[in-house]
Amino acid sequence: MHNQNLKSGFSARVDRMFTDREFFMRANGQVRFLTISAKLQKRVALAVGAVIAIWLLATLVMTVSTLTASGERMALAKKEAEVNSGQSEIAAYKDSIDGLAKDLIRRQEAMEQITQQFIGEEGLNGGELIKGAAPLSETGSKISLDAKKLSAAVPEAAILAQLESRQISFADKLTRAALARTARAEAAIRDFGLNPSILSPQSGKAAGGPYIPLFTDGEKQLHPTLKRLNDALLQMDHVERILLAIPSAMPTGTPDMAMMTSSFGYRRDPFNGSGAMHSGIDFKGRSGQPVLSAARGTITHAGWKSGYGKTVEITHGNGLMTRYAHLSGIQVKAGQKVKRGIQVGAMGSTGRSTGTHLHFEVRLNGAAINPLPFLKENTDVLEVQTLARERTDATTSAQERTGRTGSRRG
Image 1 (cartoon, rainbow, N blue to C red):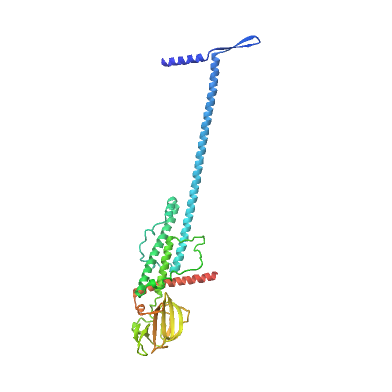
Image 2: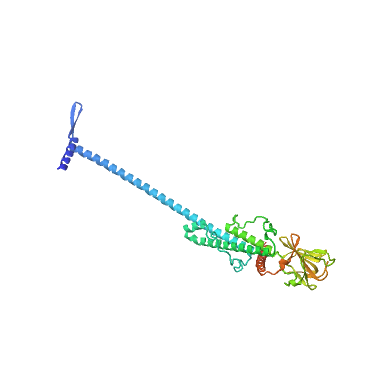
């Protein structure tokens, strides 16, 4: 009932709005009437309303279409940006992988060159150098942060990260082995009664020459792991060469110390009976018996020397020099390089001598020191010397072969 009343009220208001309307027009003294019925008014109003509604609907549709197209364009632009960003990230990862691979190749080349320089072409000599090396340090057993991030972002890079980890671990172990050998060589030097820190301490630091890059692409700095390895091997090489310069081989070729007839120090002079300083030790033997070099070195004197007769002097480096006097013959010449145990002369009785014997001296920085501690047999020390000799011989041979190859190529 209420709805009917509302409907009736609305119809009444519409009827009042649209009533029959009459219009009159006067022209040339005549009056004309124009009647517009309520029904026609309603039709016209309805038509106008329909046109307006259609226009509004079309406008709304166009607005919605525009907004939809704009959203699609924005979404497309966003996807395109994401694709471009993804491509950039892929390119960056690819560059990172290539860079990591190049770093690994450089490091491997450097490790090979450093190893060959200090250990020889045989590498680790069947692993002898690293046997008994201390456990790896925490730093050495970890891969670099860049490699970790890269392997997490790009699974294909994980293998490179593993290779890097193995390289760093190997270099760390080799470094510790070199440090251990250095400590053993220093202990052996002390067993000879010498202080390794005062045996020409600057000889291992003096260096020079033109700058020739290790790598051809402008790489200037060694990886910290390789730098530690290089420093450790350089120190090991320096200390072991000091050890090898110590004259520990018997110059008469026999380990029998009973052949010694006169010791180092003060004694009664065999000619005038006065107290005198004997600057070496004497070994008896037969005339012409071979006299051997007590250590590797360079012949710096081969000839007559007042009071000593026919004499050979060998400079071993690090301030050490050995003298072989009263010889009957000399088999070397000045400037010649000799190895340990090479014959340099023959036993005799030239110069101020009472009979056939060898006068053997060891001098440190020009001052005579007692040779006896160097000649006493010590199995542990001799073993350290032997290992050092084998290593340095291997590196020397490798360097000589490299030099000959370079000469042929040149």
